[in-house]
Image (cartoon, rainbow, N blue to C red; front, side, top):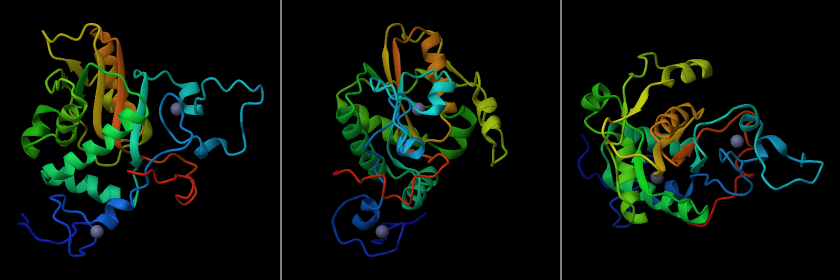
Length: 254
Ligand SMILES: [Zn+2]
Ligand SMILES: [Zn+2]
């Protein structure tokens, strides 16, 4: 395990500031923050699909992407800080293998900004849980490293044990889209005896890929009586067609 090497963990430049986050300012600044027009429901950048294709009837009240028009997600909304690309992929992977709490706090800061900007309303913060066996092997849940400081920043109660993963993820590393949906269907449950009724839940994970995991968690929470579920993740996998070369994703001021 690395000691306090004063090098950026992504690019190996020497770290010059006194931050405890082991990633340099240039690398942190390279993350492609999501902004501009987003799907009202799932938060995907609408530019990915609809460049030049505005609704012709002029009904612009609620703009949803084709995915959301064809699928009923269990969550009310989903939002993310930035695109799952380049440096951010490596930062997220780093956090899956090493428990770097300052990085979790940095991500939490970005999510708190998204929560305020998007007016995300909630009563409690809940991390997407790992299966017990997986958490035992890893020693921690990476979503926990983000969700716990986020709850503190938002001044909301943190409920790490509200949800449990009852069905492990398949060992296979690469899952097709359909396998992803199958592997999480019914994989989560609320802990018996936990008070969920009427709660508005802010559900936190590191990455949203297909939305299947957030969907499965949200369905378990709604089934137990939650009033609403908003998914909030650090990273968001880009859909096809890929959004340009990044230019159409303006980097938000942080
Ligand atoms: Zn760097
Ligand atoms: Zn959508």
